[in-house]
Image (cartoon, rainbow, N blue to C red; front, side, top):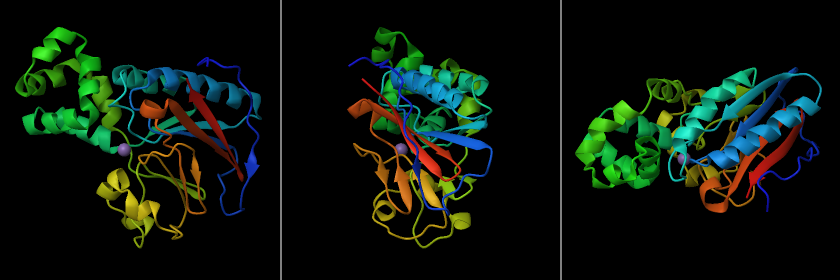
Length: 256
Ligand SMILES: [Mn+2]
């Protein structure tokens, strides 16, 4: 199947009046990209075409985190995310657990480099290192020393400027989820970036519909209290965005 299949405008679904995005704003949120720059590039094109085909509105792009690791082109994904600031009125990026570990590895701490490398960061380091042979021969100590030098400061600054929670109308955007029983204002960073089962299993009203990534499902998960859009770019070759405007929502996808 062609990656650049012909663009078809998706049909918007109307939802409950409580799930509103403020007037004049059109949000596009993208799930975990994980180094799949091919899918990211294609999805951004689809989003741009979708936005242009609709009535004028402020375009807000939200990246739900986990831009890096596992897939082959993390460096390119970060570069493209930064460049997307020229294509949208506003770009906001969440810090995923993989960005957290990447930023920690960039401190030069050998243990953190080792951990980062194990959870998928190996692919990220490779994308910045470029020279395959020298990377294969490098020790963790070598990597800890060299990594902060080969990752451009602009990339580090961009990732570090990420947010942990974005609230917009009746929605809240987080990387992983929220802890049930705790108000949105009191959520802990660790849960927002790492939580899985307790959040996914909960039927609680969290105070806003939670749009999240982090936990992979083959199809988009739309529940009353949450919407999961991590469709496993690096393993199922599908990257998903949700468009939210007023009381409408629609899905855009890129796959190969
Ligand atoms: Mn994650």
